[in-house]
Length: 435
Image 1: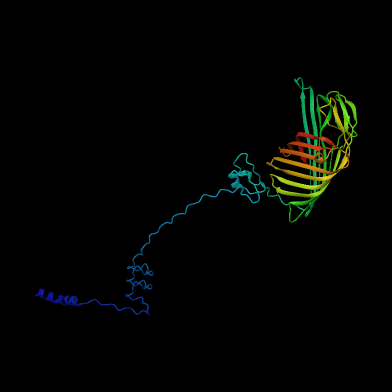
Image 2 (image 1 turned 90 degrees about the vertical axis):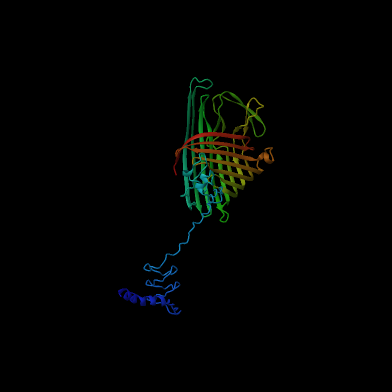
């Protein structure tokens, strides 16, 4: 009886389980938004709230409290390939018209234009010419500018019982004076300069001291620089060249002299051993030059500055006395009488100067004057009358007060002396900048 009662109790539950059908949820109206209690939110409903347990993985608004939310699918990420790195371009060759990269040029063993050149601190190649532009250097201001340098030369030697050398003392004394004054106002410039080189020498074979160098050069000139073409300027100036001490001939033995006069006659004389034979007086010969023309500066750097000048020139020469003009065909020493004269012609000058390093400088000058008029009869014509002045100088600045310089000079003035006048000087100077 108890078993039958238990069966009757569970029978209605079994009947209900077998007859129940699943309920179909009605679709939600499109315009209405689901409320927080609405459990029928679809997967595409992006406004599902945290209480909506039917939110699917695509529901981007699912919150951490939604237990049915699945993690979003992780897309595989790939690292993009790095582009190939091109090698750095080689430093360009130095163009004097462009600003150079100092460090690259020095590292690349290039010689940069000295106007914008390398910093010596970055110089890695021994012997590479490398300059540094002075950042403090400014354009020349209007007003007065001046400088004065004084120098002295000294050389002494003594010999005793040396084969082939006379016993005694060799001595050389000299002085150098270099100064300039410049006044600038806008495009106008007035420049004056003075240069004096004077030296005396004594050797054991010649008792009296004789001058070994003597030149006084004074210049003054006006220059107008054109605004639109700063490399071109108009120039006009005066120049005086002479010697300040008398000229003497001192020989180691008695020597016969043949004096050739201007009128063609010849005289004879004798120069005694170790005695002075007067050739010229002080300030003779004296050459006075005037010029007017144009100057062009096509190139200007620290390494080299080039000036070319073409002008109409006039020369006045005052001279008396004699100059050595030896003829190998005679036994005597030939002397030529000097004469005064005037010339007018075309003058061409070229000057190139610069610095090879901070201590080494150089200068080269060429002056050609072709006379179209000469006041005296010479028997010369055409290019035989061409006056030439060629000079070259190299200077080594060893310190602020000491320098070593070599000067070469070659002159030829056919009407005065129809031979090349050549001078070589190697001078150790002690200088002081006064102004």
